[in-house]
Length: 323
Image (cartoon, rainbow, N blue to C red; front, top):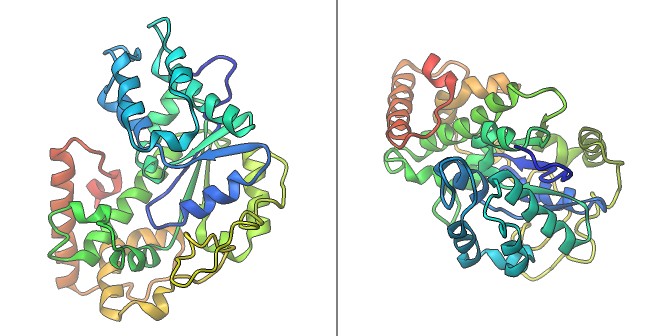
């Protein structure tokens, strides 16, 4: 299904929300050879739900209208008339159309290679691989307890809040939300050849950025360029009250530290829900043996979330079914 002659989409940067994917996008986008788009959100969803597509995956005019009506469309720097030309013959496959879209982004940015940073695509790795078999997946993983600190203090409504268990137990719900995102990304990546899937730890990226960026470039078959770690130069803002993201601050370790900032009771609840994944990833656990009551509560929360996901025909990690 991949578009002949087009290398794009070259890579997808994926990962659970609040894991540092925006930082990673800025780092990779600073490389002179590749542009990384901001979140598209629609690429996997439109295909899976056949929005604006025929049953056999051919693009229709409705898809074009859906995209250009979006308030986010302008951010990509693509002219509507150029996008319309991609479907002039009415027989363009979805993979060809989206590859053409990324090519147009690259043309606007003056770069031949183009990737996409949409964290939620961690849950759609099989779809992305089916559409573009040579696209490389970079999965950024961060300690879930630090992710939870950010989610639980987020002014916006977090993705975890869509589960009915959120108001009852936001900590455990966030733990399972994080676990699902990470597990689905890893499960999807396990089915890819070794040169197509790469896991990057946030903690390593922010403590040894040059070395991690060099290794990432090796995976992407790009020469390392120190512009990656200098992505912030000329863009940093110093107005009071700005978050590190809005202030375009340089790479900074320990912006969140669950060991110092997370109440012990919350740590225990999080680990009762997702401690198995923390252990699998090599993260230390403060409460490796949760109480029987807490374990039972976590099981009940997971089963409710699983039922809600299946009712909506959404993916559930295989590990949850085996638990």
